[in-house]
Structures are given as C-alpha cells and as structure tokens.
Image (cartoon, rainbow, N blue to C red):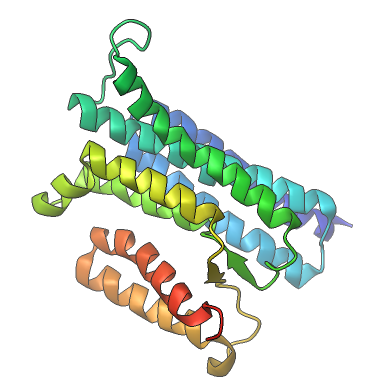
Length: 245
C-alpha cells in the first residue's frame, strides 16, 4: 500500500533538507542553511504525525528517522558551530589553511564544534533503545538543540543588539554553549514532548503554556526570541517533569 511509504517519504525530505543545509553552511551561507534545518524540523514533525495517523509504523521508519536527524540536527548544527567559532577566532568567514596556519589551540577550539554531532549521535542511539521515552524525552531533543545553535547563526548574520551579540558570539561563550548543550543532549533530565494526543487543556497544559510563552517571546524579542525559546523549553521541563513533581 502506498500510504505505508508516506512517513518514510517525508523523512527522506528531512534527509534532503539536512544534506543541502550542510552544503550551504560549508559555503558560509548560514541563513539558507538555517532555513533548511527549520524545514527539516517541519518534516521531522510531520513524518511522526503521518505515521500515527496512518498507522504506518515500521522498524525501517524508526531507523531512517534517526539517520535523518543525525544529518539535519547533528552534523548541520555542528558545522554551524564550526563556522561561528571560525568567525569568532579570525573575525572573518575565511578560515586559514588548516594544515599550516593554525595553532594546536585553534585546532582544538574549532574541533570542539564536533562535540555536537558526536553527542547528537549518542542521544539518537540512546533514544532508540530507551523505553522510557515513548511520550516524553530524557535529555534535550536534537531538533531543539539544532534550533538553538541555528538561532546563533541568525544573530551573527542579522543581529541588531550589539551587547547581546558580542556576548553570545565570543569564542569562550561559544565553547561553553557547545559543551553545555552537548551534555544536555544525553543528560538524565526529563523533558516534555510537543506531541498532542488530543486538544484538551488538561492533557496538554504544559505544551499550551510553552507555545503561548514562545509566541510571546517571538513577538517581543523577534530574532532573539528564537534563542530564548530553548532555555524556556528546558526550564519548563525541569520545573514540570522533575522527579516527585
């Protein structure tokens, strides 16, 4: 039946967006890369929804989804962080020759960006075998991590608040963000899912509160609201889903 292939087709669009995003990011066209990552996240949301609506679950679909996420929400944001670190180190988007012009310290700083794909892979592998994560998450979901890092690229490209820009995009801040968010990917911290089983307030009040606050942040802060949404997600998760709550 054709319908059983629809979720995998949508997941394949996720793969396509992530792969093309990698090309644009490597070329230094970060805004387009970010747009493609966001588009990949949309496909990632709808492939799961279509699988549930069509009852078209399959082992291949589960594995394909993780492989797609590794490209779109692991490798692509890792390369964005590489580019951000590159710019913070050299104040330019053109990196010196990797073999002859970089010090060991600079190589280490740039290489730290790839903690993101490494820990994203660990997070996705853990998700596939962890039976606790059927209706919520343990650790930061890779799309949320990718969105936060992508927002930093948008701030670099289009930011208009120098005090915030100069703080977030410094080399030390970027390294701290890389290490912190890599840890959050695999941390034993309960985090809620945006999957709605129904539309009732009682069953989805956490999701509704988050969506309302996110819309408020975006309306008040614009571009910077995107950056604030993920700490909001983490904060609500820690408060609402902590053990004993």
